Length: 75
Image (tube, rainbow, N blue to C red):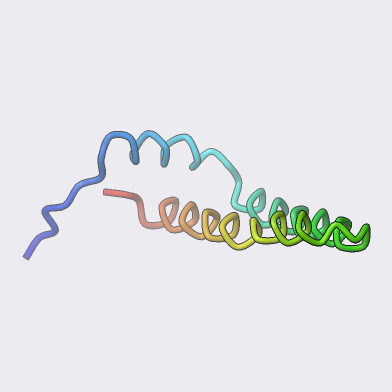
């Protein structure tokens, strides 16, 4: 049975735009965020360190999604 589901126009436009971003950018951004978080932790700004440190996982997840779309396509 064929997959009848199609991407929406908004998702397609976002994918077209983000496909231009190199995959390494997500990795280095996540590392940068972890470094910033460590800096805040060392400055004893624990709440800010935790808040910013939690950005790494979603950034890496966006990178994985971006890579899948680049390799497999969206539709």
